[in-house]
Image (tube, rainbow, N blue to C red):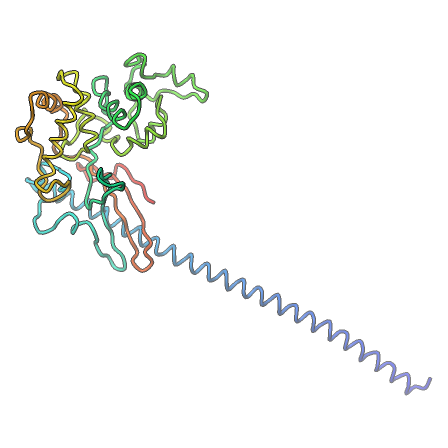
Length: 369
């Protein structure tokens, strides 16, 4: 083989190897481009998701602070009411812890308060007996219109018993729960009303034992620790009970309490007033109808303050209301605020449910959703 042919062969092999390597390199580059493209798309998608989540977090934070502004607004109204001698003397469903004003209705005061790109609304809902849904009321609501389970004793436990019975449960179960609550909060280890009630001996014998607290309730949910309590009974009565104040006698605001609470109080007083359940119920129905005013609706400007002398009562109905008058309070000490903060552009809402002490405007309960 001549030198020229040898050189040609060498050059030919080099060219083939270069082509092979070029093809491999091109393929590698193409794969790198595919991988980089996929990474870029993935990063872009992740960035977009992160931007969406960040935007949502910002609007969620805005709605929370709009709701917080509603809490401060409520505090201010309570403070103004405390300085108004007329409105401070009573609380009813229409004017609960707000100053006396004819210029603004409760709805115009609490329905929509604009702040920047959002607003807050303060409202609560009550079951409407004429329709199968609850009705919205704008304004503050009265915690003192509920049965304070921390104030129950052997004499007033019957009020909670009657409420449970009114809700459709057996008197046996109602007695067990009511007297077990008394035993839960009293300091002694003596059962209040045999065979009802429960002390340490009962709770320590459970499959998962615990001690009887012998102290006041810190929350309504603590009722699930009480002998006889079930989710069905709890859900039926939870909107009609409270744990505030922690100390003090049994008092209820007759101008804000729902009809079921007033009937429970009146029925429990039947023995002392020598009256029947029908007398208690009819007395309460007359009371509730009177306080609604001429329009027959609750929480409107013509609502009346309860006055036993203005009711057309028979002798037994009078005896019922005289018997329960010692449990009546006129002015509320704890005010419930249910506020919704809304970021208007996104319609994202935050809800804060709080209870404010009228004495020092402190928050004694707080829950945000």
